[in-house]
Length: 300
Image (cartoon, rainbow, N blue to C red; front, side):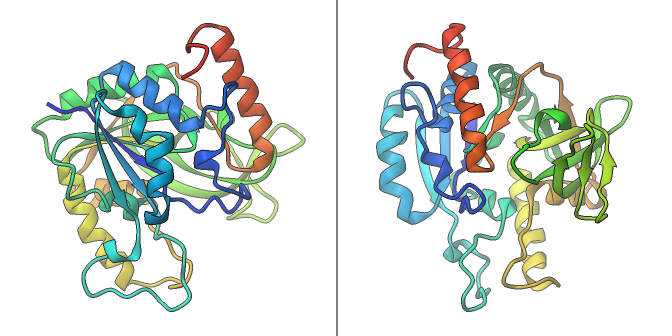
């Protein structure tokens, strides 16, 4: 069985102020995505699917895809408006993609086995990829079953601005029972972490709450269900110029309507990522520490 990793790399990076997917942050000019691929290959993944914008094809092939020749099966798919459901036309003037649910659907014709999903601009940790690789083998042959790697909220916020996180609720068996896409999360000077989207004063959140960083394990069944739900979303309410369908929102919906079960994977992996350009120095320093500690070779 193929062990497949889908990498979502079509985001616009508007808050970062540039193309963060190809920013050379590592100590020897590595882009952040190279660490995820290195850890995935080490964990046994052997098929990589890049979800990108068509205009970035040559850049991704040069920076990343070309280095994978002989190491993994590689596919490129495009999160563009021509990958929207047949008959749907976006409003004139819209340029943004339709969110992470749209991203995974761009790959529906090249994925026919259990697969993992990650963001291109996050560092997930070696342990996370090992846990997910094992989970994908367990998911083989199942339908409405999935898994996810969760991280502690306090380790995923940025001092440089607000972030969006899927705040998770689990049962006693460690299964996901709810995930709420929560916007405008920020750390405050008093040490609290607050949600400014639902309360102008900031609703205090549990710093140890589990959150989704879009590291999921799915079966092909999820793609069928996602196409159905995404089509309904496009036809439904919301500002047609800005609305997006987030993957955690899709998962939460399918748990309640289709009985999707999601195992939360235990791991001691550390996450960090770049949302804002001011996050870059911190991430660069953390990557250098990992190289200096021998967790990665001098250059990837």
